[in-house]
Image: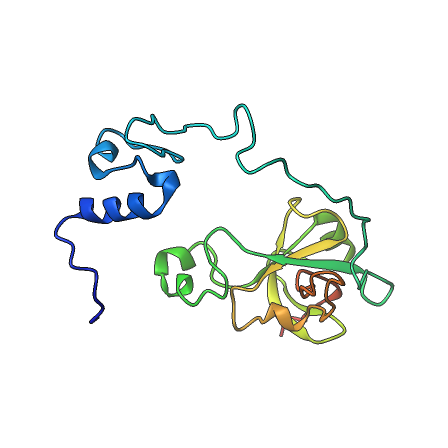
Length: 198
């Protein structure tokens, strides 16, 4: 790519440069790694490496713990929106699925949004595993299938944000944490409506 300083003739030269610039890697060399590996810090060629860090003391001092007071989410369930939606990832896809959804093998496991709902909530809403539903919040609605499972507790539903055709984040709140200003994407109140079969 036209940059200078990358005219290495062997990978050992790269490791030598790292060891020369980073004191905690000072004793690590290509040859020593060939014998089964080393764990940092390993500051000199005689150092055996550090398989377990912090056995006698903390290297960078003890942690500073700050107590915080629990603050509930900005938006909680009520009569109109009785369920709490929480969002996250599934095992077979990553983030918005721009790469993983192009993989046929991964799509064979899950290829569309499936809202996880507790059996007691599914019973109350008269939902069956092959039903189509609308998930509705104060900001919008999306369509999805359902997965009835005890993984989620009663009163909670879980969705991912892997599927562009089911834009889950359009449902979530715009509230932010008062200290970090991090958006509260992960939780909001919703209701579920079954889509009638034609």
